[in-house]
Length: 355
Image (cartoon, rainbow, N blue to C red; front, side):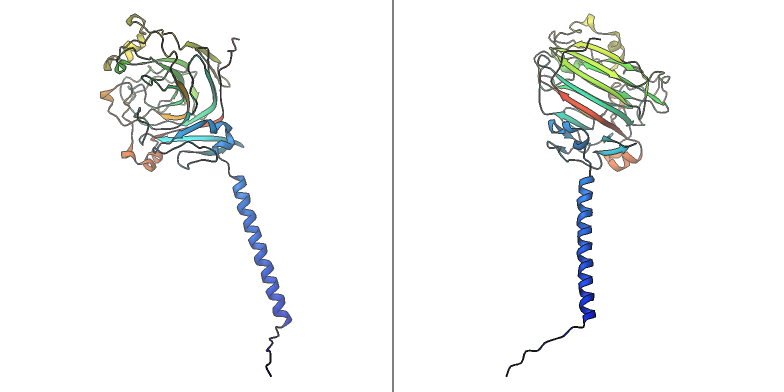
């Protein structure tokens, strides 16, 4: 007769096994909940400023992306929280990999949609500049500066009818906000130049007398970490600019993008004859300026500091530290720019508020 063997487990052992299983299941559930909570609490730039679906981005190391939903890069493009407010951080070194038309690095959005001055477009941004390069030649106009908003042409010379700058000299508390208009050059584009206009502080033409001496600190400037807002509204060919900041006068400008103010040599401002004298930039603009030329907005941190020799170009070659392109060393030694945005919108142009 076959017999079936049977093992009998003590009651205490059975209870111990059941208790252990219960603990394991609870621990597993707790871990799963923690993972879900971590994923839910993660904040991306697209959570802070929802218009990211209308942009692509180029980072300071040359990487790019056309899909910015839940996208970040810990070294260049991410979210920081300051006093319970989330900010989108754009950070880029003095030296890296950049676009084919520039020598300067950027972590910057580029608008996917295009428009002409006649059809128009509108861009707003509320930001604070946290850092600009601490090295550079003070005689060079672009030193210690970054561009935080642009209109860029995508046809012809691919020039820039608008660049909004922030610049602060080392040792100063306050920096300057100004905007540049680059002529859409008639003929040879090597003769192009930017005309610079002050918002708060100085315009681009105010420079040091020697590589290491600086002008007097601007009395009405903007400090690092101080918030300001710009609005770029292009409507029926006219660009309307508005700049606001608490404690500062609101400043507005109007510029026709379809008709040149600089179509003859006699129209070239004195600022240009002085600032660009050493590099011979004395071109004139086509009479229709940027009329019917495709444009798009850019926003972020377009670092104007670079390691080029100032003696070759006293406007744009800043001679800034770059540590042979080593990004970590640049970040450690102040060779970078960093800009934080907490709000931004992009939309069609609108009839201007003329108050």
